[in-house]
Image (tube, rainbow, N blue to C red; front, side, top):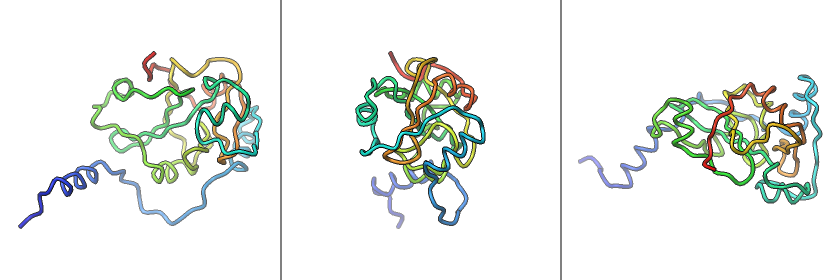
Length: 186
């Protein structure tokens, strides 16, 4: 007789939405040096700050470099119909799934946040250290128009848990070829 317990059904439902990435051999994560090599190759004016503390959260990062949380940009990997994309938001804002689904023209049910392992496999960087560019593959990217500054200095993941990348906000648009749209609620 087939097992139809709620727990089994939940596992089967979760498996249905799993990313269908090819099985890959274990690879080393990308790091600070890889990010700076990408910046040099693409002539991106950026400064890497190696800090004495880890900066995996917006408040920790802001405190470490003495800036407002609104100047810390975070890079988030989502999957829409199994395809990865990058969303960049600033501060402690939360991405609105309905707004992101609308921007992508997909059902909210077909959109989910990537797991840390999936994000690492897709980008090459660990969650908490992920920069907005320089990933293993170039990802379709969206910038939140409500939170990401258009000008001025911002700080992003620097490739390591105790590193932040300082750059001009306008470079985010240029380097990522991102679309700007409202992805958070004011």
